Each structure stands twice: as C-alpha cells, then as structure tokens.
Length: 162
Ligand code: PNS
Image 1 (cartoon, helix red, strand yellow):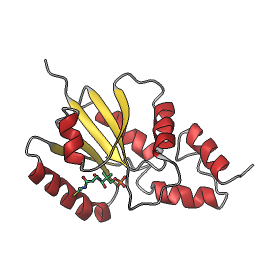
Image 2: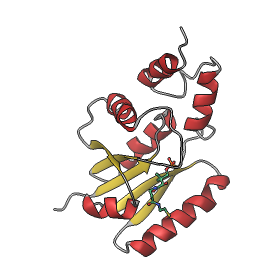
Image 3: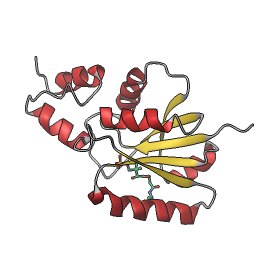
Image 4: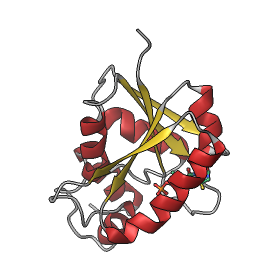
C-alpha cells in the first residue's frame, strides 16, 4: 500500500515544543512526516536553514518516520515533488486562522491533490511562538519549558548567555 506522507512546513526558527507536539500527533495520522524548513526570504532568521534542520533532527531523536528537509519556492511544488498528500499546520488561536485559511485555500487551488490538516495546539503550548521564544531568550529569560534542551542551549550560545 502507498505510504501516507505529510509535509509539515514552517520557518522553525527555532523548533519549539509546540511544533514537536503537532509533529508527534501528526505521525499518528500518516506514515511519514517530512518537516520542511522554508527558505523564507522575507523573514530575517536567527538560525540558518542548516542550523534549523540540525536542531529539528536532534529534537526528534532519530525517529525513523520523520524526515527533515528544506524547500525553496512554492509549498505546493514541494508537496508534489515528494509525493505527499497532506500538509500539516498547527493552529494556536483564532488569530492564526485567517492567514492559515487563506494559505490552505490558495494551496488547494494550486494543487487539488493535497489537503491541509489543521491541528489545535495543546493547551500547554498555545501561547508559544518562535518569535516570543527568541525575544524571551534574547533578554536572558528562561525558555526551558518551551523548547527542546538542544534549542535552549543553542539560543544561549547565539545570545552569548552563560
Ligand atoms: O512557520 P511559518 O513562518 O508560519 O511558515 C509559513 C510557510 C513557510 C508554511 C509559508 O510561508 C509557505 O508555505 N511558504 C512557501 C511559499 C508558498 O508556497 N507561498 C504560498 C502560500 S499562499
């Protein structure tokens, strides 16, 4: 039987426990999840794409159903290229919905063979975003509850915090 493949795209700058929660729950729906880091030219990133991929790899601890990759250009083209049927996105709050709805609708118009699966973020993580994590860590605040240990370590290194 054909493997059910989903792409979990995002900036992942850096990956958080909220992302990991969505990823693990996504793995219960499909056989393989490809975590795809977007080369997003509009956003100024703290970590390079290679660094972000490395952090994701270390955070998923060699789970063989997770593939870590990156993509440039349109998500729909990447989804086609890797033969995926689904895109997974997490929804934290109503404020995420409009943007996500637009993106999913546009993507579905561009590629009728794919669907976006939305998963509600767990209550423990609904207030987490990579942006707020970077802000808190940048000012020396503790983010240990919100990111994998390797990410906490790398954030401290980036911001030169002892
Ligand atoms: O983690 P993010 O920044 O919310 O992820 C956004 C991402 C990377 C999923 C989105 O910007 C994207 O898919 N970019 C690729 C370009 C694309 O396909 N754009 C069309 C969307 S309508």
